[in-house]
Image (cartoon, rainbow, N blue to C red; front, side):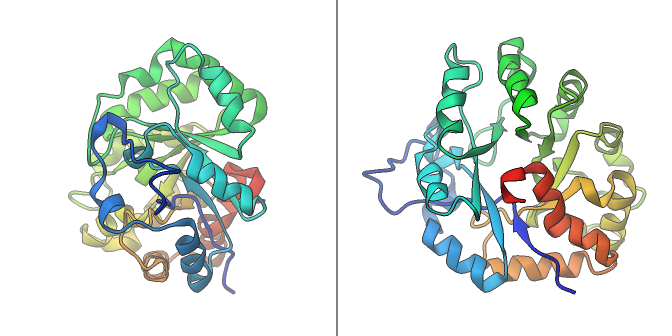
Length: 283
């Protein structure tokens, strides 16, 4: 039986730079967004060819900064198939007003972007009390927070999970684990320690596939261990397309190979059921 597939980490880039001007966070545009952009229409085509039912589209901060308009306008066209994961400045004095503005425009989750290939920060602002009103609002309405951080930021993720137990937290790229040495993955001890928090979820992307396939023991050992530690109901697939080079069908096939040793029930959670917990609008 083929499980329903929901992608919780594709990006889209418009060809219309007049309506959606390029203004990357920290002034450095991501190479992938410039060299292999995928429009909303292209994403739909790729999803249909790959058998992906729905998606939570993640705003590209390295293309548009805090202007979520392209994702918002796209989600509005097919709200039953898509939701948006937006970024904005949680430290700004008007952060709650900004929250309400994007909430009215299809925001189904918030992404806290501490940096990526173009720029990296220490992420210390994640636990700045000035951001806590937004977290409290998320707790009140059941909105998921997505955090992109390095392993050095995991202690802050734990602090936030304790402080806001009613907010679901999804870690981009599975928390960027170090799989050196293979099982039992001792370098991942801090990541695995997060499993004690019921509100922490891991997003498995092609970056995770590649790490697992290259590690001692391969993908079978790692994903079996990850399910054992976190539970399949706390793991979800995200394509990272087109930052992870497609086509989407190829990325799905890579995931199917990596999850081959898991049970049908476990695969169903990772491919789609967990996504519906993180983003009720897609349920």
